[in-house]
Image (cartoon, rainbow, N blue to C red):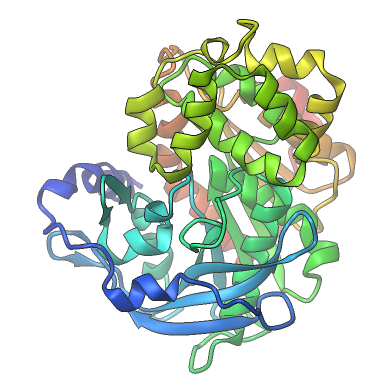
Length: 427
């Protein structure tokens, strides 16, 4: 565990010791342009190409062979969508029981611009396109799964990387479908060591935790053929209404604009209302973040309050709660209304300063009420970190080893006991 924590921590600083490579070559840029007509089906491969993998640190490489993928999925409106991503075939032997497993990884918040696609920073660690920089901070987690001999597929989500639409950030169905279809696409790749009998796990933190949670509860009806064994949802934004409140005024206030841009394509009435409610500053924020990665958004809108964006000086949280139509559109993204058929772990920092801890705990409670096998894991935090996101991000690092161990046990068919009965006694 100490080794993994050191790897993650050093990886962030390691950008100074890694040779900064250029943005993907011309072939990679054209790869992300979807064809006008997509093939039928979900998780159908549209195109593939070999891709190189970034060094995580000097002399330390990802132990696998990567393939860039473009595959089909379905958006909230039921329309086909092209999604990019990457599959990594491990070079390490799987020493666990049964066939080699596959973990479908949903990245944490990268941004809303195409430069931020996780598959691009997976290739270069730092992906530079114009003024935007995508950072491959999922690489340490991917490294650990590959080092255990587990195959990995990484989704870029709908609209992140592909040039045909804006990324629908935190959109429940778009995220969940994209993650499940990434697993489907990986299983269709030729010349791999995984097959339909391979156990599949879902893994994500922050935005990725929402995606993994959504995918887990959508799987029984959307992808019942997958041999799904478990899902890890770290710091999941399960209730966007509450996250509107907890993220407001923090260094990540701008992610609220991401979320609005992820909902409005399917709710035109919401878009027209926001046009009336937003000041020029608010409209500028919504437009500007569409091409930004998280670093630029932090510098542009960090510690702003959403009441600075509205004509009536009210926060978006207050506006949402006062308008049934707006609230219904946001509530449509609520995770926890459907029932996963596999064990799930919900992990959250008790003083998370971006994604409210209470709504994550409520997700666990909602699933428990439906009879789901839930491992609720509160990471006790004693001091607030003032909206700097430190309490939000720290559990992703300090609990990485344990969360991987939990999921790997599920992939090997080991039983786990729910702690739903003690949920009320836990923080």
